[in-house]
Image (cartoon, rainbow, N blue to C red):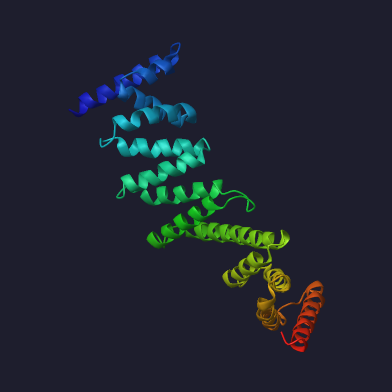
Length: 273
């Protein structure tokens, strides 16, 4: 039985060599129903670094071998070929699919890592939409929980820190953007959330000042019956943040806001408002 199987494989490899060296051999192989020949050719192309050709054959083989003996090998090398071809979006999907389909495989840890890593590679610069970055962080965190002693953990922690910094920059840019377009209430709330979410952010002091100034400008533009309450909030924010404001440009401006706010409240008291 074993001898027959070996002979069959040898014939398939021989057939592959004939097909691939003939004119249009690759196209004929794609259309062929000889799946063993296709599998042998796919692995040959993969080992020769001809990943685009291997990918087409692996795609063709996936449905035929579903639930069969070679299914795991095909799924793994299909994902690897996509990864080495730098199609990270599709590779990440296939690695994630592999981890779901073969949860007891010895390759499942590596597949889970590469699934997250592909999202990390495709994660765009901080000024763009960060949905993929958040997905990558979530996958890496799940990986960390399942394989806390993995040899990949130093990399995983580094990638998570790097992407969190990217999210921090994006969140600050969004919050400051409201201030820039003079949406002062939205700016005030967004900057307050940023300060609470990122207590160690390098731009924390900037966020505190622009929150203070947004609150002041929002109070000035409020309806008369709301002004006192909002101006008092400006004073409370100044007291909360004044000891933290160390940049020269912010100290004088923040104190100026404080002085003007107190003067405005004093006028309201005189007018009995």
